[in-house]
Image 1 (cartoon, rainbow, N blue to C red):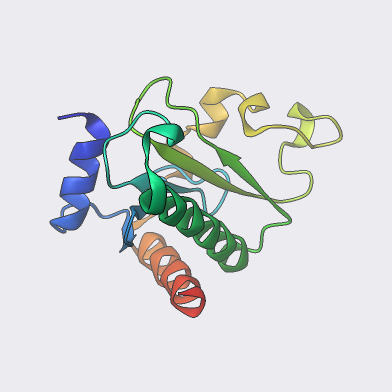
Image 2: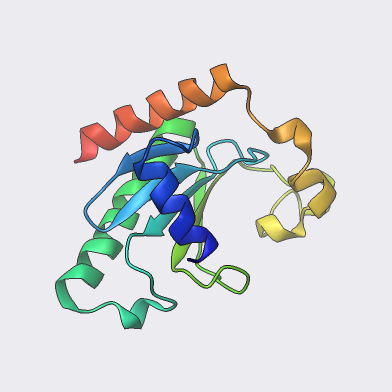
Length: 152
């Protein structure tokens, strides 16, 4: 079983504290590291590597849900702009990284504070200082779930 399939299983069994919501085609999980506050993953419930491997109605549903999740993340965490990333070079299970961005959030590492999240040095982006406390995580999940419920 791939790591992301394992994450889905743990999430649906109640064993993932970052799990937010199950949808028809995917699951919503907050990122374990929150340098970009509200960083969320939208994971496809089917094991696929590429979007084109999904067929017909399921593909349309997955993409529709991803847009809904992005809108909910944006509203929940006050994004000025959303970044959508579907890389899969490390974990080849289809998933989107949804980064709510704020103007100037890269500070000295961007072009006038602007640029892709990956311009931020990894030791800053993935610092343990960015891991939310259990209380903060519950608050984030509640806020995101509330926005998702409004859109669904």
